[in-house]
Length: 87
Ligand SMILES: [Zn+2]
View 1: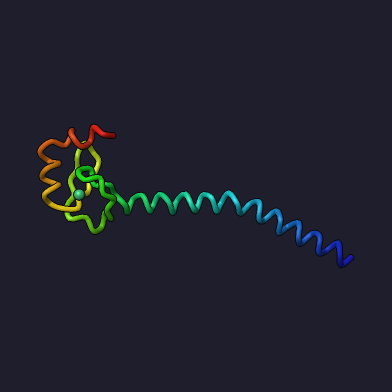
View 2 (view 1 turned 90 degrees about the horizontal axis):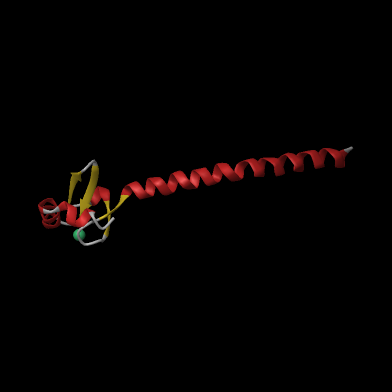
């Protein structure tokens, strides 16, 4: 009787693990997305920078671009298509 009870518990734990796996994957995905938001690629020099600590940012065709320096922002503003086309 006792053994039977244990097998039910371990069965429930196994089922719980199976259910937990996809949820963890989703969590990891959400985490990766959040990370992607925080990091931005400077389109001028190609450097990966933190969006929060970017020296300058500009909006072009609905996308926000971040720069490591104000000089690069003005460079981008002069001819954004030159840097965006690379995509
Ligand atoms: Zn830069």
